[in-house]
Image (cartoon, rainbow, N blue to C red; front, side, top):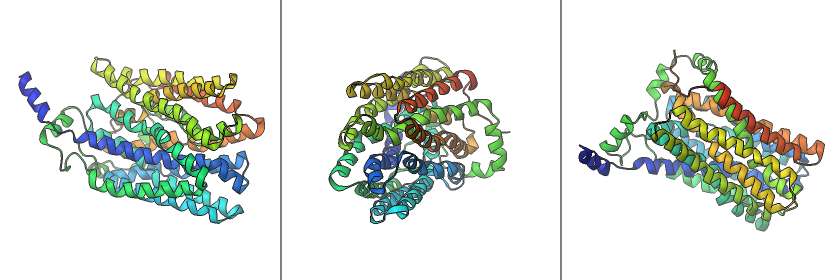
Length: 441
């Protein structure tokens, strides 16, 4: 019997590994495009004459539309399917990123307004991506592999910094800030075309065999990636939203994600400015200094998924397997506050690296979404989750901008970020309770 199972496993295709690599690549480009504004920020602010508060609002522009479009984006996924909505999203956000390079041809208020509008457009186009990632993961991975798969694509946010921040800083240093947008936009458009040729659902992928399909279905994967039939059966969207928001477990997960994402947006927006303004580095030095924290975040992200899946395989409950990495990672990320009490730049970068290592370990929110979303409304549930999380993209840049403007330093900003990590711990320990899939009534 065991020999037969071994032969079946040997014959099983591994298409899901290609799929998760595509998610990783898409998410890497996604976060690199978000971070373009932070790398261009110091030079851009100087050229356009922006102060800290104004830069805070420019940094937040992406998140305003991103948040508002989450629920509609999730509905689009449920209604029209993941593959083509995702491909259109990649193409559009990349095109809007490329056009931001033209802002350099304008001056004054016109330049600022155009930049703000284009950042809004990027946020609008990117809205369906993470709900789609969660839906694809739920379709292509059994429960016991889902933590690792989700952690892998989510860790791309750090890999984007490792790979692209030094490159973008070099481009700014040698060619000017506008060319960062042109470079990243062109790369994304090319990737959108590749996506259409590689990504399919488990039911119709030309490379999957029946052995892998059976393995996925037996392990709890939801093979209907697009789920359009389920979307029609889901009934009234507003009724579904009320049920999702009325669920204590989901609400705790949503608020916890807001707090976790606060750390992400500090890193995506103000971190390079912190290194330049507070620590006196050049933008080129800041670009390379950001690599170590990002690399540690990437390693932590992978490790969080490994720990979670390992706990599951050892017989621990899904609740324990997801909460242990999240809570321990968030506690570790509070080390960011220690930067206020040291002077050496190397120690500051080391503490930031430790904080983002912890944040990476704790970034299992999308695995939890795949575990808990109703089968018939995965896109809508993921959109709602991302709405809460990325509201931090609005509040974090603005709050930090006001703190820096009023106090003249980043000390209060780092405390603000660290305290959000503590609130995330409270949510998962005191509010969420047992992690399980929600059944709609």
